[in-house]
Image (cartoon, rainbow over all chains, first blue to last red; front, side, top):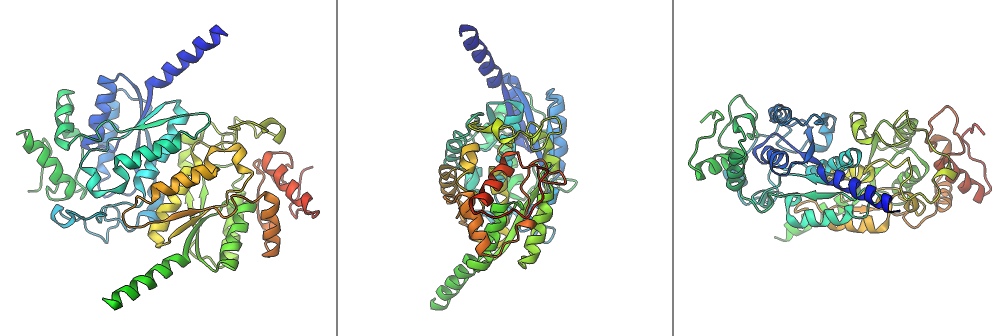
Length: 237
Length: 237
């Protein structure tokens, strides 16, 4: 009986060290990956989604960063067959242009919203966690996301975690350690951790150079400006 | 102003008539599809998932039934690249045999459990509903499912519906009209609606004939026996 308890405790510690992290290849999720590996010393299985996004070059960054950090268990899921689900999003449809930041300010659901994307990504990451015997799924939601998307709020996260408590065997939690961080806070932490932001991608337009004017470019540039440093990426303007 | 309100109401009625239904090709979901089209007179966009299941012949049944009912908007999503997520389920892995019903009775998470499958399927169906401008997503969970799977309970459904209320633009509900029905109740309704159960598939083993001994065959046969009728499918024993 005593032996059994010790084994259970060991098993628990082992699972506590296993984590799944959703990484897109952008600033927030790549900083998160460095944080989990270097600071939290977790055994991270990253998961990345190719879903027909115009800026699919973010996926190459995710792959390189996972390799750099020694995460051999990186799963890149091809969801490009999901186009009929996501056809109305400007992130995917070639008929819909990516808006500049001024066009989306204050919009509760901007054109770049992808229907139910975060729920889908989290659901897939939770399945991966069951398979990897991980107790936690991490994702890089940060404070600013909340204004644009309903599925990044602390309330969304808390409610979803309650549902996942119903799982009878694998009780896994979703963690968003940056949910109260600004993008500037994330960048500051990443620089301390030695992240090479030249190996991350944010621009929704996905051209050779970053556009500098879409919402994600604008937020990224603001974070670099707040710390009075230069973004290593090249910008069209 | 008046005109605007009338348009809004029309728009609401239109969306109320649009529905997405998850159909596997099994008894419950095919009965559900007939019910929604014939009784509820809804404009149904069915969605079906090919996820590496051994019994993928259920998908052919789903396709034929959708065609029969005039649902031209049937989306069959290929999730076979998800194998790394589902590798530990006997429904998918060729290394794991499908258990007979006696082996799974009382097991809170039988070998046929697929990690987080229902959450994933519902999340995808909800995205499809946003794209189809449907206000409701239907799925065929019935009373008996609850014993085997955490993600078919009324509590799971109620909590998930609460989360989806957070969506700022498309408020969509998940409906499971058979959640308090036994499989016998479902069969009875389906027979009234004229469902051809020879064009449905249940057996997890997916061989030429239904095995008659896996959990889903056993439940199916019990429902037919309860109504003292013969299942039109052929059984190995």
